[in-house]
Length: 208
View 1 (tube, one colour):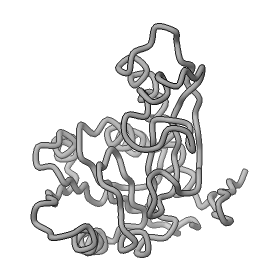
View 2 (tube, helix red, strand yellow; view 1 turned 90 degrees about the vertical axis):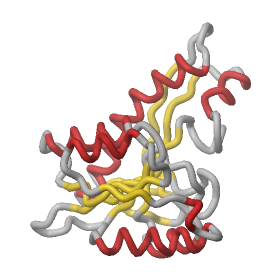
View 3 (cartoon, one colour; view 1 turned 180 degrees about the horizontal axis):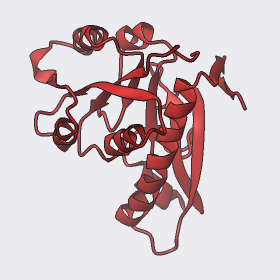
View 4 (cartoon, one colour; view 1 turned 135 degrees about the vertical axis):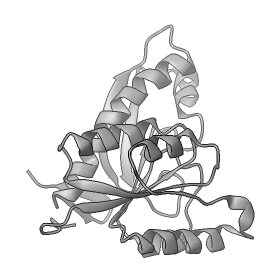
């Protein structure tokens, strides 16, 4: 993506839970570190605390529940309509617990970002932190990647390394990784907004 002239980049954030990454992004935007605005926050869970976080900052929220749709494609078609109605440039998955279909991926090619609590391609899917502990790795971390139709398989944008301590539990390791997530995700978004990211096959090139 190239820098969008004088208009700030419009983000559409998809959430399912507490929204700590959403909050970190909002904080960086409000501090003037990212030239963007959160155009809307969409949740597939009506009780997601991320919706409260967004509302506290005057951001439009949309509850968009799975049960109202017969399949994932129809759900994603409706999601794309919501995002386009808010003129979204970049879609952010901030703890959104659904795998996207080609409907969404094709609507926003190389413009959907996700963060995963492991150093991909190791430990994709759920409970990545426990997977890392069970395997006995010395280092884990987080990965920001563009989204394709697989599970955590899209081109990698950025990674941050977090050491694994001998007495770690899933909870303690998750907490340390989450701190790295907040910084890494915001940095990747900033690079995208500034037009410094280019995708070349599976490789993401970042301009100096």
